[in-house]
Image (cartoon, rainbow, N blue to C red):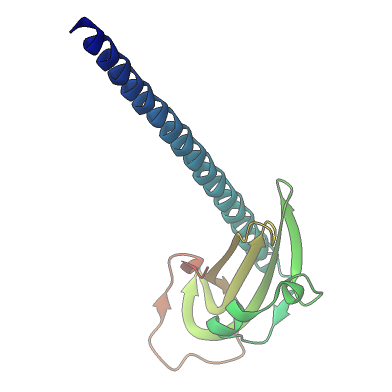
Length: 176
């Protein structure tokens, strides 16, 4: 009777060791998955910050009188379909934020002679689109877009009600 019980203890111990080994393997796989997820989030955040820096640089250049990097109006779908080569071409402005490159373009939307911003009558609206991509290897890309209003001396007369505009930034969105 004792010999049968000793064999049973061996089987129970082996089962427990197998379960513990399985838990250790699953735990290490979960840890590796969490590490990959963290790295992907870090890459996304770095791209987002670089694209945001592109918007800020575009704002700065517009509000200081430069309209370099101005392109004809491009639809949202066409912007999303633009290749990396187009974004890196001379059609766009380039910059770098914490060793992460970004590109941006500026589109002239319209002039509103009846709008007032910062005590200036006449406002010009611009759309800035910024693109940042870390590398093809990781497939991490961010495209941000904003519309801003800037004081503008308009040749047109206002034939409508005067509209005050309270903020330079009119809209902001994540395209990709």
